[in-house]
Length: 241
Image 1 (cartoon, rainbow, N blue to C red):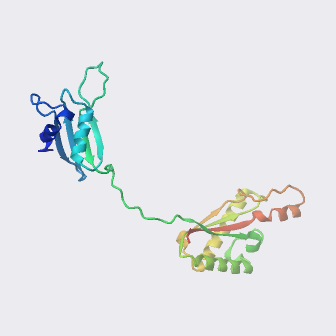
Image 2 (tube, rainbow, N blue to C red):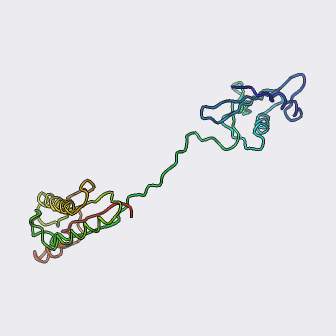
Image 3 (cartoon, rainbow, N blue to C red):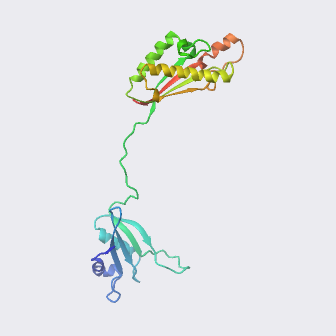
């Protein structure tokens, strides 16, 4: 902490403002403080009987000149327990813009991953009833999946591909769950075989837990046809366009 040479001079030059008298001597002291963050700060002490907190602010304004005073902390005098006055006589401040408590690092704009493509393939068009093995995949399904793989490869930045298998509510969930997962895995393997990065592909089988239809029980053939939209595999592609 370095005491400023001009502290007493400021007081002498402003006798009517600060309340300094020849008998009392300087009624304020001003110091410069070297802060660890490199920002120069100052400490003004105004303890004269005729002074107030406003005196410290006037001293600060003189030190800062044409730049704004940025108060950092204020300390009041020690008072009796029943004295509730607020008249701080020590002002810690800096000049110019307020110093930030933390350094501001440049933030690079990062493109948020979003769904850029969605595909839905009906299971009836992918596999025969109850099947999920690669060799059981229908020919038309292979053509469609090859087209989808080509579409996905055309994107510059693909961060994730999610393949989800779905079944209808017919049958036991202990069968539908594994069947939906096995179909999603077969689709994943086919996409990888056609040039996609398997590390970004996630597979999931949800069975009949996410139906898209509301079909009433009744004739078996009519019910199977009504539930057809619930039997599908979805492919969601995330990335930036």
